[in-house]
Amino acid sequence: MEGSESEEVRANLSHQELLSDTGGNNVAIVPTGGVAVEGGDNEGGRRIQEENDRPPPYTKKQIAMVAVLCFVNLINYMDRMTVAGILYDIKKCFDINDSKAGLLQTAFILVYMVMAPIFGYLGDRFSRKLFLTIGICCWSLATLIGSFMPTYELFLLFRCLVGVGEASYSTIAPTIISDLFVKDQRSNMLALFYFAIPVGSGLGYIVGAEVTELVRTGADDYEAWRWGLRVTPAMGLVAVILILTIIRNPPRGQSEGGQHLHATSFKSDLIYLFTNKSYVLCTLAFTCVTFVAGALAFWGPLFTQMGVKVQPNPNVNVDNVAFVFGAIAMTAGLIGVPLGSILGQKLRIKIPYADPMVCGVGLLFSVPLFLGAIILAGLDTIASYVVVFFGQIFLNLNWAVVTDIVLYITIPTRRSSAEAFQILFAHALGDAGSPYLIGVVADSFKPYIVPPNMTTTTTAVPFITTTPVSLNTSVLAIHNLTTLALDDDTVLPVIPDTNDDYVEFKSKQYAMFLCCIVNVLGAVFFFWNACYIAKDKEQCDRVIAGSIEREQREAGRTSRTNSSSSSSGVSVSSHMSEEESEEAQQAQNLLI
Image 1 (tube, rainbow, N blue to C red):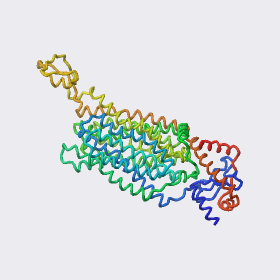
Image 2: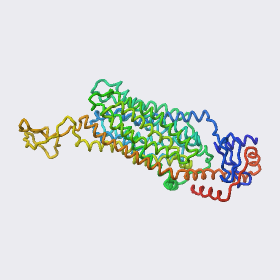
Image 3: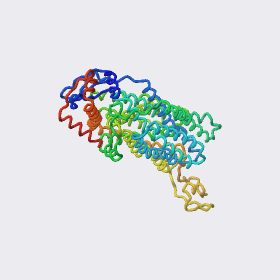
Image 4: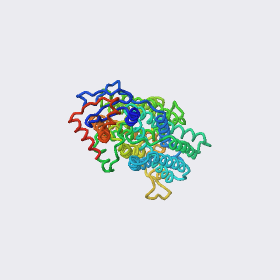
């Protein structure tokens, strides 16, 4: 009986357990599966021998849940990036410019970021499984119905509705993983979960482009792209079934023994998050990451296609660009995401601020690589592919590490809100605006770019027109309507065709240089974050530990004898100093 009670208590406290003794003032530390070790005075009774600090083994249920969450996240990013793989056909179908094309992604992200805090609030207080199911159904139906829309405006509306559904999943799913695992186990599972960003994005390019080419009836068939959007809704139906049958709602904070923490007011959550320096700086840095990732993901394939078209002797087939770009994104993600997680885990053992340093260094290393890839796109496509591949590896170091940072500097009952507000601000100032901004900047450059085969020497010549011209007639239209009385030696002023392939390419190239500048800014924020992260993580740990101590002391007062007999065989008490007790209480006050 005593053994079963002990096992039941230890089942609720994963990886590192804090159990009060009968006196209520001492804390026994028991690593799961190990033997309690008395802490030294220098560490306040909380130092455990490294060989005993082993996490519990993975269970089949945990593995199944993570597998389902990873699958759903994969189709989430497939759905998000399919549009980028078929963007050329969408532009031709709706006859839109770069600004309106970029608005498709920007509008989606704007709705996504606005809905994220709402789902974050709900996810911290109600059934997460329910909102996961609702979100998947919403985005799948919106994508399917949107593929039938005959006008740009209606298609844009349904892309916005896709953002509503995806906001629920992206906000809530990481917190479920957080409540299943701790420390390195959590880092590993988050790395697996965030494989979906580059891998899903790459599959989105490939599936969208290949399905479109498969059903295309001719070179001028610009309606075939609609079938490319109808793949992920079918996969969404499978995802809903898996969510309902496999996913459960783990108690919030279960993995760290903080399941007794209670949700607080929305105002308290906001104050807690925005006074957490590490959280604020990490969010600012991640905003820069999403700006660059969003711009590259949305415009990358089309920019590369334009680069192939302006080369006199291209070394790749323009029709295969989306497929290759997707394969590069997938492969870079398979390498970069786990590499970032592994570097963070290994280095943080000796360097407590290693995680933001890994992210910052990765962004800095990516800058010259992206710069080179942008320049090479119009000269040698294969060389550009190679350089952008390594650039994406360094960019992908961030995904799992950033989420890990947010989860271990935030208490369990506020993690959904923390994820939600990071999504809000990172996307509001990041990839919500970057596709549209790149499109606007590109359009603004077009009138000033002259193809190399056009003459720019000008001679002032009067013109005579036989066609009435209104005040609203464009300069290019006027030029086309005129009949000029010229000598043979006269050289006309040249008005560039804004639809020329060279103009299209160069305008996007100039706009894409913004990504390099933003990457440097992101690295600065990550390095700044490194100054505070160790302190903020320690404070969060104290809050969680304080809740365990308080609950155990209350249990000890009501059944002192039973608690003593059930814990005496597995723990050795270690005394906390008066100063440490006060610090733990101060940390606990953050919950109020």
